[in-house]
Length: 475
Image (cartoon, rainbow, N blue to C red; front, side, top):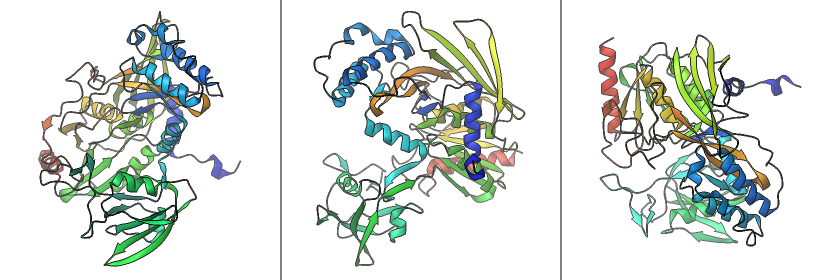
């Protein structure tokens, strides 16, 4: 093997270490909740009826509390005569799973499964542009027929807000501020003035390697362009230096394998910062190894999280394992206990480097801060590393095992709960606990419902800068 093939990013190495330490058979995932990515024997071809039955059996063997399934036996053969295609199996399986009243438990069809895998890789197929929406002075979205309305030029054409670096659109010469006038569909140029943005986005989508012809308007001139759709890399970290030596780091999600490496690069850019504002607003979660390893960039020594996971088995006698993750020195230490055996097993593996160097941290949270971002927030606050400013987080202390399943599907089953170092369970996303989540140390409500994070309209960031200034003065 070549040396290039042997190379791994730090994030990949840490994830491998976390697997050895006992997270699961493969990578744990937290998409608006913690989860485990397991390779089950179901990952093969099955008839549609077999796909449905495998879902029925796996759900009862894996769900955190089998009582949530109610009279599960009634579903076993309920749709046998109606299931002919894989589409039928997925549809009926999701009807069955919905009876558990858990919106996070579901069977993804192959297209949805492929999109999830690409998201973890940090890629999507497209041209690499984003649009912005019109908002009122109060920051509320402007709607037409219930759909958001794009910001437009004087002629009514949607304005391109951003062009992703190295994307097909960037290579074709599209610039932020251009207006999209038309998209060729079925051999005809379709004028998109006044069309719902969802329809425009659908016209721009397609298969990798296919081309799309568009016309953009710049400085009053029409510019025809041909763009070849490709895998577009999504970056999850934004950094910048603010006044008075304050560093700002925003993490948009924990759902990409490269998140740890991007945060490390961001911390290196902020190496001269006296304090760090860590923005986790709107962050829906991602990979559990990312939450653990990113937390350890900030926590020198201490417990990071405690996870209680259902052990797959007999639904009449459910068993669980509890894993505590803590960092000390250059090690990630895991302590595992099980209800089906005595004793505690301790494992050690490499941790991500401690990079904070004792600097103060302010974490920004809001009603979109969930799962892995709550796990990280809890780890930093409970270890007296950070104060939290903003609004209460979602309260998503449950997680799903994410299983590659038969016929290219993926099965999500809620199978675990996680707890902050202080022992708090954050809740199940509001299903039964209405006051879950993380209550900020400093409550600051956003003065607008919609604004760009880090912009001049961001009053929460302004408050965080003021708080950090006071903290730095006290040092």
